[in-house]
Length: 255
Image (cartoon, rainbow, N blue to C red; front, side, top):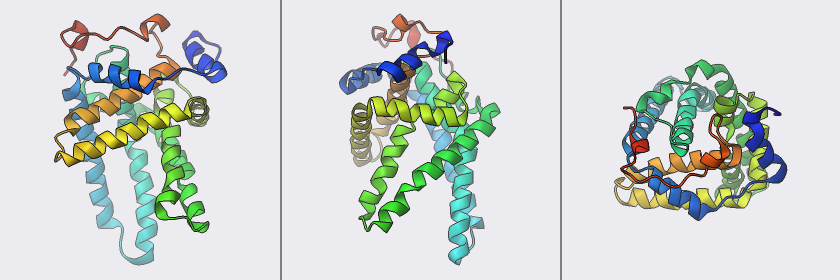
């Protein structure tokens, strides 16, 4: 990681980085202006493909104990197949965070990385799944047993962009994401806790609030990645820009 494109990332790993949840949300709110539609269309595409694949899973999973194993294995397979599209959503947030154009079909741009992303998704699934049976074996309530898994999902949030934007290997990306999380675990957990509250509020509005909350989450993740890792081709002094107004040319996106 001695190349210039890794300078910001190396600094974050060695010296840490600063995050202000309030500032992240303020910037993200301004950045979704003019960008909600492409992000929403991309999100609907990812969710639609996921639901379709899960429906197919239900039809072939069978019955009884064998069905449980089939469902688990097929669920892991679905997450591996969906990894390039999930990574595409993450990269839309990264691009928006540095004023690069975004478009709805950007989620299909990363299938050339299917093998490393699928392998990464499998490793992430295995790592996250280790904590649930451990909590159950200790007699913890289901909600508490799920807590380490949820924390691990936050800790691994940088993994896909590190592969797609920095070119790291799956193992390197996972380890790097965990190291970055260790540097700012409280701020990262606080941001995600606030997003959970916002998603719950959006559901209570019969889903109408998701028009704002879903794009907000994607852009928030992009800003967090930018602050922690930097983005190749963007000078450091431009990676903390003054917020552009909604009428700025930078808010014009490819459809």
